[in-house]
Length: 64
Image (cartoon, rainbow, N blue to C red; front, side, top):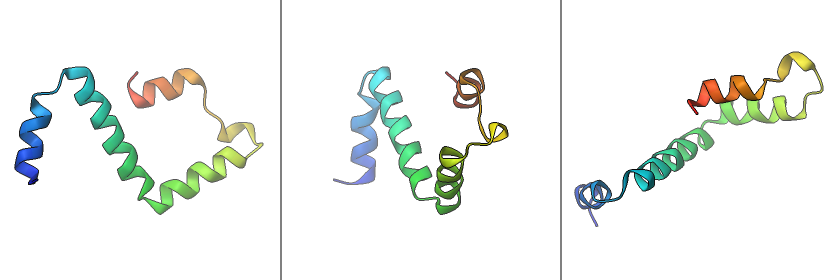
């Protein structure tokens, strides 16, 4: 299947499924970024409060 065919099929999906796919593709792109992966790992392991973010900040950053 060509990229053009995939795009045509994706255009036929309901908006909610298109948004889910877009989110998935962004996640794949981020997983391929070693610098971002290291930063996430470091922050997850950190006990320093300045490395944390609030749920509100997270929602604001991700647009939800």
